[in-house]
Image (cartoon, rainbow, N blue to C red; front, top):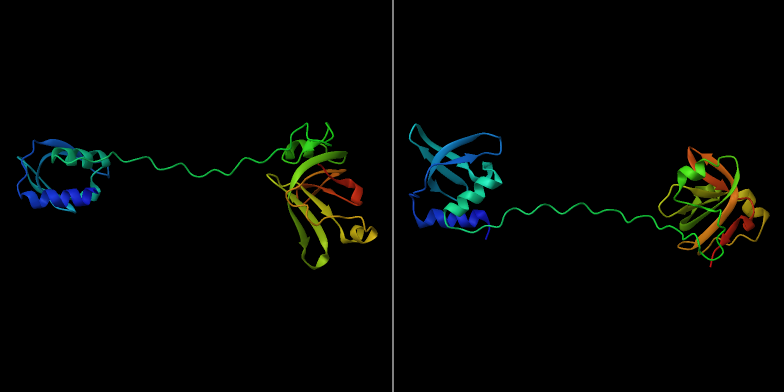
Length: 202
């Protein structure tokens, strides 16, 4: 049962609850010594020898004070459970170094800093294709990869130069790209000019 229902039961069971004076804490950080005079679903009436009765909304009591109040009334409550941790995004899928057909010197697409360190050099990058995107009316194509900002850019001009491009159905497949490491708007990429630069690994 929720505390609200339990306290309502306590209120119905008798208007005068005889409890010893105890220290009670509020959510605003204040505390006071008092006896519990009356409990209703939303309100607790406290009394003490040196001050008039004090009405406090049960929601203003700290969790510890609410538990102690329920215990003093002979009611059982479970302590508040910690909230579940936020869901974490799955870790990026890395391509094993010993993946069949992978060049041992190839960098993983998720190692952006390592790829960036090879800026201006010809290198090999291996990754799992996330999407094959056509960029608006330009007809340019961009391959995005799982767990990384690294991408492969293929200009429409180079697409039209060769009929060997096989880009359909690449999503979810592991590919190895060979080419010059470049940047576009601070994003690391390889601009592929020939179909042979993109090798689908078994």
